[in-house]
Length: 169
Image (cartoon, rainbow, N blue to C red):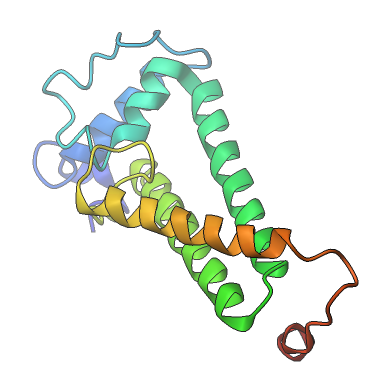
């Protein structure tokens, strides 16, 4: 349980989270500037996947992390709006699932790098270096775009959606 008190074992089990805190702290409000991070130079392990938000915090500061969080909030709100406007139940549940997948993955990653939950190994969607995780995120975005495209052809009031009333109760 190194995340509960990382200062108990700073050289072994808590090394990653302490280096993450150091990166956030050294970034301050405005950051050190792009490509000026010191923690990514062999101090913070797995910086390109799990702890990329720490490097964003160091290079772009609190303002940069706030922009990243705002972008994920915007993405999730638009994804749920796409789900609300879906023409059939399949599109509705597909949009809800894809949006929740990406939003929850981002939330867990941001909680890990700030020390709120233990390290899970989840990359930050769209930002972290990744192979299969990035492929799954892009596939989920493709599904969202498909559901959104189908709902563009319907005008408000053209078609009743009785299945939506049943699930909205």
